[in-house]
Length: 66
Image (tube, rainbow, N blue to C red):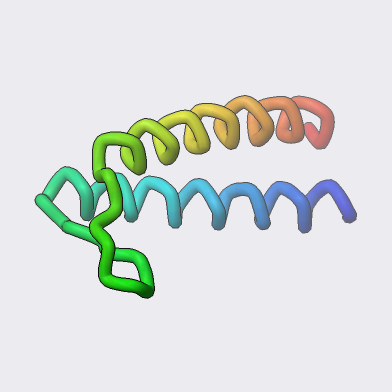
């Protein structure tokens, strides 16, 4: 059961990362609270790495649950 909740949590994080990547792909521009622009290339790379890591973690968990 604990594995299932961890799996769902990781899947939710992955969906969020992919949603943000989609927004960046559509030209979204983010700013920090102080108004400074976020480097969108760096943010895209960070989110791509995060999604890849989450994919690996999800696959590992799914293989132990099933």
